Image (cartoon, rainbow, N blue to C red):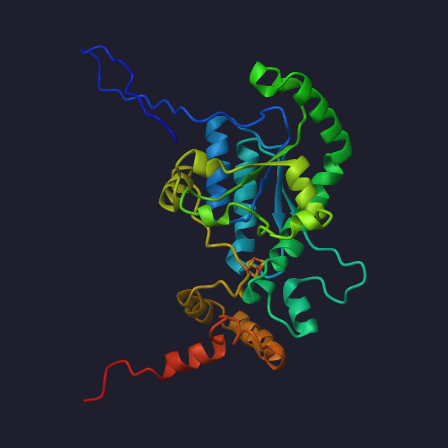
Length: 309
Ligand code: SF4
């Protein structure tokens, strides 16, 4: 949480307030710092706050599911120019790369398999496959885990961070996630698995346990969404739209209506994806899980603007 002090100022001078920001320190400052950048409000604010604090990431990754909104893609050159200005590394776009599959995007997968994105069924594999895994692949190529963990474990265990010897350690990659202070429900990538102890840990679980340290910087700084927007504006940047797939089953109803107003072509594709999956749906009704987007929009159009007398 940032703490603010008024600097002591002589009584005859002009009023002057100096803001001193005292944050919890950056965890493991000499470990590589990788930003999971979603091109949305939170992660954009996190980059801005990093720049303000002189925290320079080693890598900024944007995982492109192929289904982001046009506004999100249009924000990329905007942030690129800002990053250049503050001397940050450029955004690296990563994507799912199929070995055999006949699709490259999440939309393509849904159409090919006659399914909805997994979040519609309560899973998270869509984000894991199209967001996390491509980022993990890039990060582990840049910072080989065996080498990094081996060096880190040795150094950490022998010296310890509390002894102030952290500069020489590489205990893991500090992965910064742009969640704001009101999003505690999104703190982990993976759902807790009650049977996990019975099985060999997944690659993701192993990486989380041994390779990644998650840093929720915005939470550390007590920044909620409004504060994020203020921070972005103060940096002279436009506030980006919420980043998510335009067919995301977690969309709010007002976001479905927004999509119809702003991108009717994309809405048509979302409805086609839903209709394509319909014959296979047993546990959910449609893209809205308990309702179908198609029926929701039909009902919306049928609702009279004012009640009949
Ligand atoms: S935005 Fe929604 S549909 Fe897209 S990957 Fe994330 S959870 Fe899945």
